[in-house]
Image (cartoon, rainbow, N blue to C red; front, side, top):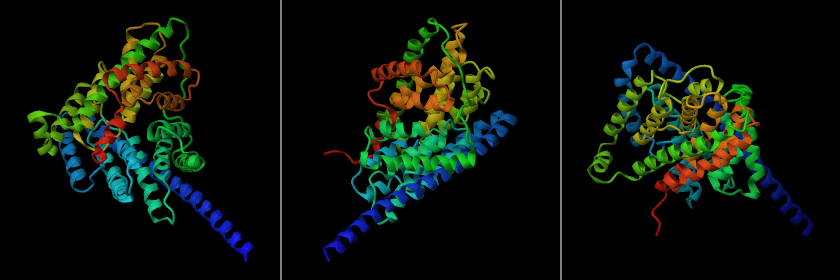
Length: 428
């Protein structure tokens, strides 16, 4: 009898372990499928947006404000807590205690709204990305799977978020690092294998649907001489400072602007969003339409020397991204931040003749992105993976560290963790 009871306990234990593994793998497959779908939709919307604004540039003065207003209206009425990047919501959800509280921030309803409204933003010219939304969608899918399972797993949201990054960029290592550095600031040993398995499953599905590609194409740019290395601290400091200013502005507006202006924004959020949309449209017209969308094409062109960016692209892209984020529409910061960094690197390279443009663009991407999120390891790992350039790893590491130090002089905390506090109940 004792032996049979022991066997029964062992069977239950093994059954539970296998349920956990299947749960994470099935979730990873679902995240990979959704990430690929969002990539297809986003690319299609950007193509249509470029067609419209390419034929009628001034149409943006009407289409973009109206689109921003409609997006915020739908967000507030139908999909609350789907605004912005979505990464702060995923971070906050991990800190909440009950399933009901987490459900307000990560749910299938929010995931659906996030996909639809992110696509709408890209269609009307918002300077946003799809990668942050993929993180919230991935976390929502994994959380939903956990709610219907026999046992709920504390690592599901983390796994979904990390898998979202991996599938969106085809960067599995960056997904793991993002999970450690940005989502949890630690690693859960018990679920580490399951999280990696989820990332692998999501990555394989996304690769099968989108192809095995390097996000920005393979780059062999290098710092050729000791003189070239002088650009590392320069770009690191400038990129970190600019990223810190961006973060401080976004965090300040999200927390509530003081005075009459703040009260007006709170009372008329749709009107404020339309004003932000009008300003983005003006930035778009001034840049020849280059600041609309994710900025992927512009960053890739700068990296490979395939074209010259419009004068002031980095600054205009920064302003357009800040306005898009402040407006409250759903949309991410990943790709636009990398595009801003590429623009800053290219601009600095124009004042340093003889230095390798591609290398300085890479430094700009890492430095500005680090300045925004203050996650230096994620920054240099993801840029290295997205370009297949491992020869620049050491200068990218140094630039990231300098950028983090400079950013903290301006903004005490990275934008995602600072914004996550707005989704948590008041302490005390």
